[in-house]
Length: 224
Image (cartoon, rainbow, N blue to C red; front, top):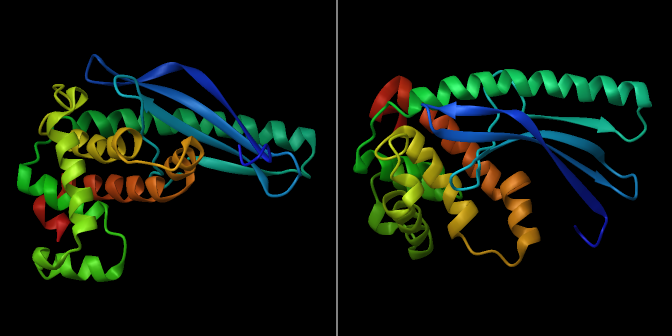
């Protein structure tokens, strides 16, 4: 990747995150590093929903989902931090399983879904202000088309018709992750990888995760 300057390796962990009984999420650790020694080695926890290969990356309130290791660290320190990441992954998996199972039982209406998607996909303060003022008619056609694409995926993708996703908060979250994974056009696979794991896709996914968390606690008022 990046003309060979950056390499990445994924390792599949043995256990699944289970949403209800049959909706399985595989757990991966992804390691990225550079050949030229710049930057750090990054180890990230990356869950992937089996049925649609959506990456469900998110950092929980009290936990990061990755650690960075200096290239200059000793071998012993690198092993200690790698072991630390395994512990983080185990805790994240347990928390995510509880969260996703709860989300799969919380209903969300179509108007609420649209509002959540709009708030999650906001690109700047100007768009956010228009949404808060109820000025949907003044939103750009580009932004409106993105929202329609996410909603179409939410309503028509077979992976969104499962008991865990259809009309649920878990489905709303998967609609946004699924857009970046399966709908949005990218210049190339490298751009897609970068967006989902460290760029715009990751940022929007994190916003969606936070919105879903607040919606479950507060209902529609969380989307204002």
